[in-house]
Every structure is written in structure tokens, then in C-alpha cells.
Image (cartoon, rainbow over all chains, first blue to last red):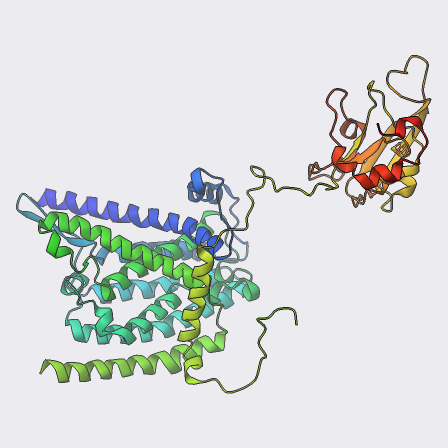
Length: 342
Length: 189
Ligand code: SF4
Ligand code: SF4
């Protein structure tokens, strides 16, 4: 029994890890295709049919490139930076519920690596460690552009984390739990949290953009001002790790947005037609990934629509608008609970 | 005014809906998604080539006559006409026994066009009294090396029995223009 449990967990970990990496790899392809389509081009189409082998070609290229570590950099920290970025990016996947449990021979196997009862806090903790990857990398490069990029990244991530956390508090007030598994399960049918927390959702998704350093908040790596931002000095697969971590983060953010606000693996009306819980669970995976893919697409869609903010506008938006707004959201939620539940 | 979509910029205070950005962002998202489904402008070049104009002026060809002898007599008129000074040549005298190779007593031993200098104006073609040089609708192959872009006779001269079609260049106006040239072989039949 115990060994079966360990094997099942190991399989879950490996599968989630591989799927995460696979999706991140193909996000790079999707990003280029989406960018191309939005700009009336056709994008990569030479590596394999429709250019589908492009991520592999890119990966090989990254590995083959010459690796340069600047003389004046701190070597240990220089290598630690991208490793940390990648590590934290991969860690967050552990608490996301991919679907309702599958029951085989009377044993229920939840499709979630681990349902810690403080899932949201865990994600926040890991994400805030992610800042260190960028900060250390930028600092260790010993280059002014890297340093500026790293400073921007850390300032931005720290300020937007506050608003993000506050928007989550309102969500936690309505759900009454911090466990992602339970939050997802509560949203069966039409009870998607986005309907109860529209303002919270807006704040959360905007902060998610900022946390992932995606346009319109991609100031840490804006080419026009900072060459490449915090990864200016990086080359070869270390650069690849930074870029890759960004895509893994995007995938995880999409999964979290889908879980917290868009019902996770739930889809209204499906329960009426399908009753077998196992089939329902497999369908749940499909719905979950459909939602995740939509949000990944949304991330890209936004990127190719909106120009970058100016840095002071970014800080203004974070501190003077989102934080008061999210506090207001908490108050409104409290009021709502008071009026409707009692 | 170049377009009918230009907007006059005024420095007025933004309204509330403008200040919360959201309507503008949603509008922008609609614009981009419209482009997402639009027909793409890209032509997948090496696999698909764009249709060229009938009188496209591309890589030159040095013609041979109906017996396979070079028409060029190294008169240098094309080089004189060339505004870009792209043509250089060295003349040589035909030896007995070479009648099959060269049409007249003088020929170009070296004939080079610098494809990087050339502006594809077609003046060399107009200047030539011997119908020896024409521009064709072939694209010039690119190279990463400047020396490779100086095309000699090996690249310019057409192969006998594998002649380059230049009928497109012989438009009505051209034939009209050339009819006064009294050399027999210039008269089009
Ligand atoms: S096309 Fe014009 S520029 Fe080119 S070689 Fe002929 S005359 Fe010179
Ligand atoms: S190509 Fe024509 S104009 Fe030029 S040298 Fe030869 S015969 Fe003369």
C-alpha cells in the first residue's frame, strides 16, 4: 500500500513535470505563431510540418551555443540565478488540482500531486523566491543593465505581490479555505469564483502579468532601454533557463487563474450527461487544460496588443491604484458576506 | 492628410473610462484578434514565388545567335551607357577557326557585371547595337561574398540550345525602337 502510494506520487510528479515542460516548450512556439498571426505573418513553418519541431530546434541551438561567463562576475551566483528561476518555476505545479480524483479498485487517486491545506500560501512563498533568481542573476552579472533590470524586476514583483495577496484574501473570505483542491471542488456548476469576485479577478490577472514579467509589465527585460535586462550577460542554456522559466511561470499562472477563478476542472452542465466519476475526472483534465490553454493564449494576446508601461506608471498603478482597489475589494466582499449569508 | 483615420491630438483631461484603461484595452484586443484571423500577407518565398511583372528587370543574359556564337562585339556601348558603371570588359580579336564561337571579328574575352553596383535600369540593353545583352525576369542569386557578386561570362552567357527566353522584353515599343537599327541581324522577323 505504501509503496503503491509512493509509485503513484512519483508518477504524478514526473507526469506533471513533463507536461509542464512540454507545454512551456510549445508555448514558445505558440508565442511566435500568435505574434505572427496577429501581425499578419505566418510565423515559423520550416522545422517540421507547420514548424512544429521549432522548439526542439531552438533547444538544440541553445545547448550548442558557446557559454560565456563574464570574468568579473561572481561565478557561483551567476549559475545559481537561472537555476533558482527554473527551480521555483517548476515547484509551483505541485499543488494545482488537475481534476477530480480517479477511483480504481476502490482506491481514490487524486489528480493533484499534493493538496496541502495552505496551497495558496505555498504558491505565494515559492513565487516570491522566484524573485531571487532574477535578482541574483542580475547582480552577479556585474553589468549595469543587468543590475537595473534586476532592480526593476524585484521592485515590480514585490509591489505587485501585495495587491495580488490582497485580492486573494477576498477570495479566501468567500471560499473559506486555502487549499486549491477544495477551492476547485467548490466551484462545481455555475459557482465560478470570477462571478463573485470580478474585481478581484481583474486585480489578480493584472498582477499575474506583472509577476511573470510579461507585457505590458516587461520592464525588467525591455530591450529598448536595457539591452536584455537581467539576462543581458547570459548565454547558451543559462539564458534558455531564464526564458524557459518565464514560460513555465506563464503556464502555472494560467493554471492558477483557471483554478482560482474559472472553476478549475469543473464545467457546468457536464454533470447532467456524464455520471461515471472516472469519465468525469478525465473530462475534467480536458476542461482544465482547455482553460489553461485559453489563458496562455490570453497572455500572448495581451502581449501583442498592449505597449509597455513606463516605469513610474507601473509603480503608480501598483501602489496607488491596485493596493487601494484590492483593499476596497476586501471591504466589499466582507459587506457582501455580511448581507447575504447572515 | 495621408489617411482618413488620423485623429487630432488634444491635451484634454482624460475621462474616467479613459483613465481606467479597460475599454481601450478591450478595443485593442478586438483589433488584434481580427488580424489573427485575417489572410496573411506572407509569400512563402523559396517554395512559392510571387508573380512578376512582364517587364521585370532582373539578372542579365548575354545572348548567342542561332548558331551558338556570341553576339557581343565588345564595343563598350553598354559600359558607356551604364549609369552605375557596373560593366567592364576586355575585347579580343577572333582567331581563324573560332567563327563558331564568336559571331564577329571582335569579341569580349572578359565581360563582367558587378551585380552589386547594377541598378537594373536596362540602359545597357537599350544601348547594345547587337542584341547581345538583355535583362531577364530571373532573380540574382545572393551571396555572402562581394567577389561572388561580380558575374563573369560563365554566369551571364546563355547556353546554346538552352537559351533564356527574352521575348517578354521585346515589347512593341522595343521592336519599334530597334527597327531603325539597320544591321541585318537586328531586324526582327
Ligand atoms: S542594367 Fe543599368 S546599371 Fe545594370 S548593367 Fe545595365 S546599364 Fe548598368
Ligand atoms: S553587350 Fe552589346 S553594347 Fe555591350 S559590348 Fe557587347 S555588343 Fe557592345
